[in-house]
Length: 209
Image (tube, rainbow, N blue to C red; front, top):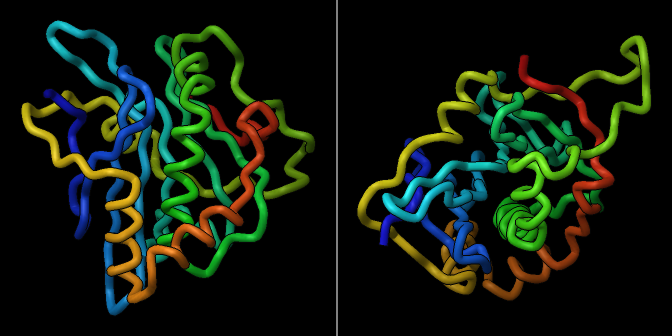
């Protein structure tokens, strides 16, 4: 089975089922002394079956090690959403307070992208408009910092390799628990408490030109 390219440059990179035959998740994260300082969760969409071609249509990330990264504990969760013929749009999500466990946040992000896969496919195919417009004007609130658009586009459009490193949801939870020196039950409990509002209620904070 051909699968999307795994995230590069991370200590751990895996494929995870997305609950649809035409979608797949990739997860990458770093681990340092029972701490996860950086992660990336992406939802991939199969553009064509023969030959198989994938593109990443939604991504959620965290990076507390770089000034260019997006620190979800300071800026909140966001999702970059690709569209077939229009620029990538960045949505700021409404959500409950984040658990201290980055592993739980990763698990929650994976659950979210899986649950909302139909929405992100519809936005990519331009069957619906993403999010809602900003509720402020004249710079009333600061715009979150996102990864430069060229890097986002590059990461969201790589062609798939021939082999895949596929793990189940349960195996992902176990990997995250091992990385943080905790239990799978704690990871799952934190993820379950991370209530993220539907993307239809998200605010559009930026659109790549």
